[in-house]
Amino acid sequence: MNATAPHDSLDARDRPARLTVGVVGAGRVGPALAASLQLAGHRPVAVSGVSDASVRRAAALLPGVPLVEPAEVLARAELVLLTVPDDTLPGLVEGLAETGAVRPGQLIVHTSGRYGTKVLDPALRAGALPLALHPAMTFTGTTVDVQRLAGCSFGVTAPEELRLAAEALVIEMGGEPEWIAEESRPLYHAALALGANHLVTLVAQSMELLRTAGVAAPDRMLGPLLGAALDNALRSGDAALTGPVARGDAGTVAAHIGELRRHAPQTVAGYLAMARATADRALAHGMLKPELAEDLLGVLADGTGTGGTSGTGSQEPR
Image (tube, rainbow, N blue to C red; front, side, top):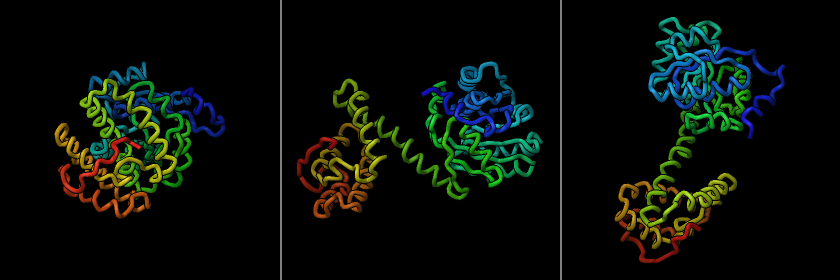
């Protein structure tokens, strides 16, 4: 998809005024968002970054935009993106407000999933306009991120009087605004981390195990399987569950645990936790027969790969 298409879809009358844009924190997110806003006609004017990687990202995504100190970013920009780690954000906002860097009427936007706009209260007291715009996307720090923003959902939190402005900025970046209440931000962020961050860990572990089993190209083997599993899960939820846990194949699960303990003991805890969660959901939705669940749960409680049943159920990922 052409990365500029979402930006061009807005009628000029619906667009907010063109703004000068600054980025505090040239991690993977900030430069990509600023580059996307530039496609919509806004003008990046300053970026701050310390590490060599930050400098390279800024140069690649925002060529010609000067690197300056955070306070200077605020001095030059009408719209400021605070794209720093969650734990850094409160102190950064307080420091910028205390030093007088924040100007009345300035749009201060953070991209943290965890926080709503309350974390921006010091800037609000200084007269700034606070917005929380969190892209529900994983970033690489390269130009591909700008393209990925097309159709990406953003968790939006803002004062009611700024709601339209917040949603307009998201749409200009090619995204889809999804309103999240202030008090729901931590739960919203936990849900995304559970799905996306833990998925990376699961896939990386699966590839390592396949290599150990002698598979030369685990990525090619997993690609179609995981793509289908994700598509089925998004379409059907728990009804998409397959595999030995959902079938109640306690013998197969016991064999898995035994093999993992021998070859990759660091993966056992995660396997047991996910298998128990899967069993609970399969039981609750009537997919796992209660008479089969007893042996299965016994194997998972034992956790050694030797307890429960000696059955030899299929190990195919059906």
